[in-house]
Structures are given as C-alpha cells and as structure tokens.
Length: 583
Image (cartoon, rainbow, N blue to C red; front, side, top):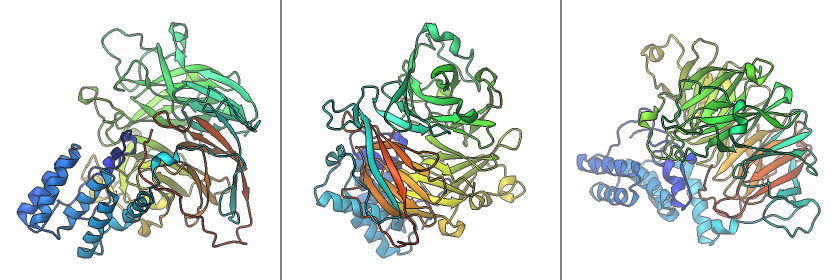
C-alpha cells in the first residue's frame, strides 16, 4: 500500500460546481508515489487506467473503469481511495463517505482518508439538510457579533462599503460603485489608510482606516499617454508576442497588494493584461506612490501574477507567477522605483516555456504558485503550490539563489502563507481541505536534506520530502472549505481566516489552532487584513458569477482575558462546506 499525502485528484474537487477553476488545485500525484497497486494484476491495470482518465478530467469514464477494478478485487484500498476522490469531484458526498469508510475497514491505518473524511461527512450533512451553496449568497446585517459571545476574541460587524444595494438603511452601510469584485485589502503600516483592490473594477480604492471616508481611487487602465511608466523590456528573458501589439495599452486587474519602504509604496500585481486572453505572456506590477496616490512605475512580470511579498529586511520583493511555476525576485534596496531591478527568477522544479503553454494558463497553470512568505531573517522564501501541493523553499543567501526542494505532508492546496512576527511559525491556509496549519519554521527547514546529504548530492532537480505533521510539531484547525486569506494578530496569539464557502471569518487560537469564534460576513469572502494594533479587521467579499459579494466589511475586534475561558468552543458552520470557486 502506498503512502502519500498529495491528493491525486483533489485538483478536481473544486470542479463539480459549474464555475470552479484551477486556483484551488492541489496535487494530481505526489513527487515519487509508490505505484498504484491491487493484489490482482488485472485490477491494478483498471486502477491505473481509471487514474489516467481522471487525470484528464474524464470523470464518468474513470468511474466506470474504477468499478471494474472493484469487481475484480473489492478490497483494493488504492482503488477505493481514488474512487472516493472521483465521487468528491461529482459532489456525491454519500458515496465518498461510503467508499472511504469501506477502505478503512480494510486498512484502518490509512494515512490520508482520516484527514479528509470529516469534511466529506460535513458536506453530506449539509446536503441532507438541503442547505445548498445558493443559500449562502447572503448579505449580512450590520452590528452582528461573533459567536460564542464569551469567546476570548469577539468580532463585531460595524461598517460596509458595497455596490449591491442603493437603498441603504444605515449611514455606515455605504453604496459605492468603485467596489467591484474586491479581491484584497491592506492596512498601511501606520494604520491610517486601507487599500482595497477592486479586481473587475480595475481600481485600487483608498479609505481612511475608520472606514468613514474614501480618500482616493487609482485606475489601472493604461493608454499611450502612460507609456513612460513602463520599463523597456520584460525581465527574466520573457518575451511579448511577435505580432505587433500595443503591449502597454491594457486594463490591469489588481489581485493582491504589499507596502514597502515604510509605507511609501504600494505594489499591486495584475492578473493579466486585458489583451492576453490566455494569460500566456508577461503580466505587470504597478508601484503606487502613496503620498500622491498615483502609479509611479509599472514593471513587467511573469504570466498571471498573483501574490507579492516583501522580505523583513526590505531588500527583496517576490512576485508569484501562477502561469509558469516561477517567482520573480526583485531587488528594491533603491530609494525610488527607477532604482528597483530584477534579482533573479526562482523556478519551482521546471519553468513552463512559452512554447509549451496550452490553453488558458489560469486553468492550465502548472503548480499554480500563489502564497509567499519569508523567514524572519529574510534568508528563506516559502512558496505555496496550490496544484500538486506542498511548500517550495528557496535559499536566497546563495548566488545564484537555490531551490532547496518542496515539503509535502501539510496542505495539499496551500493558498495563503503568513509568518508570525517573531519569525518562528509558518501559517498556511489550505483552500482545498479547509484547514489552517501552523508549523515551526525550523522544523520545515530541517526536514530538507542538507547540502552534503546523499539526496542533495544526487542532483535531483525536483527534490521532495514528505513530513509527518506531528513529528515536526505542526498543528491544524478546520475553518471550512474554501478558506482563503489568513492574518495573525500582532501579538501572535490568534489567527483569522476568511472562509469563502460558508461566508464567515473564523478566529483560531494560534497555540493549538482551536477554533474560538465565527462571524458571518457578506457572501464569498476572499481578502482579509488586520490593523497594526489588531483592533480592526477589513474583509473583502468578492462575489461569484454575479452573485453575492461586491462588498468590503469593517469589523471591530476585542480581546478578552483568555485565562477566564480556556475551553471556549465556536459553533460549527450552519451550512455545508462544499468546494467553492477560487481566484
């Protein structure tokens, strides 16, 4: 029996709903999985044929072949495990539970099934209660409070900027058309301003931190008049189309954001250039001067740029390229944007060359790199692989920078990565399974082979290490499927997570990742940030297929004496935690 954490078809679990696509994609196979095996050679052949069919999204055909495998060998655990994921893709929760419980009868010590069976059971319970995703397309009343009320952390919904309801009934509920599919939100380092990236609106909207005043709107629409903002040639040997195009005339959709230079600059990577329908060419990254609220420079970056992160020492800026398995590293030690320069292209295993790109890179995205986090000393960069799972790690102290390998065993579909203020722990949200993990950085780093180890000496380009979470001191808590952005309180004691599918924010105790409180937010939340003092939280609800969302909520956070209530437990979600779309 093989032992692997990477979920062979978890990449497909999000596609049973009509609008789901690849950002949620964990692994289709582990780095060096043991062979798919049954006792019977014929059953094994059917198992492997079904695996190949499912890999190409031929779900119904795969299911038929898997059933032939079980007809020959009803107790083949590998076949039962794979067929469970196929039913998951179809949203057939009763069958997922049935086949996995059957597999556990034959192999009670199976590693992966106990981790994900609870999620399947919770989804099944929601379906049986006839609580469907459509019921979660809701908008929340102001001034509701998180539950339970006696929890150490209490969140109160105190204000909102939205574009779905003109007829507001409260002065703190503001209608504003600039809020158009808001993706991310960032507090300025001094806590005075909040920057919201409206993805579909192609704008960055700036608010005062109280949430009562809109300060500025920055447009990401470029014409020939803005040509001077752009650098000459794309970095890292990227190329633009050979057919003449006005490459710098486009609409940019800002995804995430990051402040640098003490808050002087705000960086916003664009999903893709509007003329690049398939996301196969270099995207762009805007540098906004926060003093004037204007774009001061635009850098060319890799295809479908997603996440941007500055190193603690302020030297490096990393940009994850969703489309080709790379991360662009920039040296930002200069004082002004014209001084910033490319510092190297970090490749996770193998860069996807332009000649090999097929179809829409949003869906055919390789490892779908997204979340980024630096170690406290700025030496190491952690990269989340939303497809094929794991955390890729780079050592930036060497020249050239060195890919150390990928650590598997925690999140099969990591989306957001955060390091606590002390630089001791890495927190990871797993969009696929709904768990949020905390793992010691030293344990993650020590799990990789050293430079002189036999594994490293072998020269493997795609080095993977699978860890046992318990053995490295990692712990996790379940927030709900579709968990998106996470943030750590300034004192490091709490973790807050936006849960897209159940339209909630969940607060964890960081020490053991137990759930302390939940609060309902406007539907389909994705982005979340805390004020520098931890007293405020802003949440973006993006919406999906013209339903729900289009809202930015503001929340007050109060912290009680945790010694008073040590066993506070938050109620379970009201609805099902079925997979959701991820952008």
